[in-house]
Each structure stands twice: as C-alpha cells, then as structure tokens.
Length: 247
Ligand code: ADP
Image 1 (cartoon, rainbow, N blue to C red):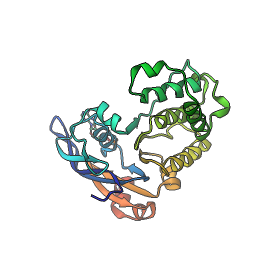
Image 2: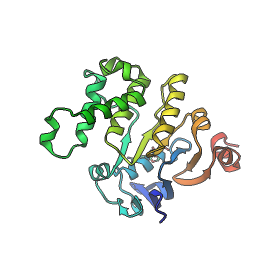
Image 3: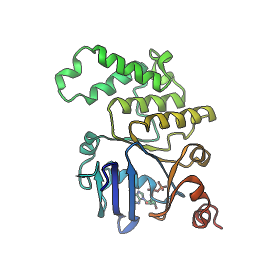
Image 4: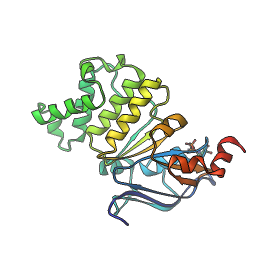
C-alpha cells in the first residue's frame, strides 16, 4: 500500500438480513484528498460511511486506515480515537451554549486525562479556538448562543468542533443540505481549505455543489462501484447517465 493512502476499503460487502446493501466495494483515499461519493438513493453511500466509522460491520472485506491499521472489526469509539470523525446531517451542537463554549467542549473531548478537562484553558488552546473560529467564519459570533446561528453556521460550527479533535479523516453526510447558495459556496471553500491538511469523504446529492467543488468523484449504484474519476469523466459516462436519468 502506498504511504499516501490514508484509507482503503477492499472488497467490502454489507448484508442486512440477507440483502446486500454493499457488494464488493473498493475505495482508496489519499492523504489530503476531498472525495465526493455520489449515486442514486439506496446506492449504499451512507452505509459505506457507516462501515468506515464502525457503525456497521461488513460481512466480508477489509478496511485499512493509514496503510497499516485494520479497522474492519474495531468499535466506533476506537475508530474515532484513531482519527476518523463522522458528521451526520443534523448538527450535534449545544444550542444553549455559546459558539466559543461549544468549541471549548470539543477541544476538551480530545484530552485523554480526565482531570485536565476541568483545567483552565491555556494560551495555546485559546489560540487554536481563535484560529478555528476564523476558519469557519464565526469569529464575530463567538459569544452568540449556538442555537441562534443560521442553519449553515450551525453546520460550520460542528465542522469546527470536529476539527479541534484533529481527525485525519472527516466523513460528512450531505453537509450542504438546506443551505443557501452563498452558504453552499462557502462550505465548498471551507472543505478545500480543510483538505490541505486532512482527508474528507463527502456523501452528496447536490450535483451543482459536486460539479463546482469536486476534483474526484466516486459513483455508487446498487451497492457497487459504478465509476470513479473527475467530474467530467463521471458525467461523460453512459452508465452514470443511465442510473441518474434512466436513459
Ligand atoms: P444511500 O445512502 O446511497 O441512499 P444507503 O446506504 O442508505 O443508501 O442504503 C443502501 C441500501 O441498504 C438501501 O436499499 C437501504 O434500504 C438499505 N439499508 C440501509 N440501512 C439498512 C438497515 N439498517 N437495515 C436494512 N436495510 C438497510
């Protein structure tokens, strides 16, 4: 395995009561890659994310993290601990706390020694939160109650919370669903910025967003890999047009 491969799924199959939701799926993610996972409803995209983060166990196949760690049968918290963060559609933030407090909590979750969770914040931590606030565009709203943010801002806050836990890989499920056009564009830019340091897999239905921001796309259909490549390559593929447009 090449050293730059951060995640590799080999021949992954997932069965639910005998129904094969994923059938021999392969996926290879390079370090610092922003990959879009697309496909019609029921293609198996969410289940793939579930397999990677340990929520669903594959019936066969292998998932390898960072070229050497077999995470196929590891538990969700172990996989999270290795540095694979998952964000679901609904933001899990603390609405009655401020934006800053939400980020503090996220950062403290990263700490392993229980006693230090209650220690005073150091300058280093303060500056990390400040950097994160800038990155997600919420510095001017640091003292706002998180519940008072717009839908897009809540999503960015949650992404900021994930980043403070320093994951190697972020798994995002439809991050721009329900966002305005402006928020969607801002999210695309944010994902590109994050991908300078980390790797991201995004399950996405918004094709315009994918077209505007994806460099590499994986198309799934009926639990299998249908096509992989640039957006142009994917769009020019007859089989992809067939599953999307029923041609
Ligand atoms: P996608 O995210 O591409 O829309 P999913 O991964 O959610 O697709 O689902 C793939 C297939 O697996 C679908 O047919 C879905 O109904 C089925 N499926 C997903 N989760 C379960 C489950 N927990 N039990 C039974 N079937 C499931």
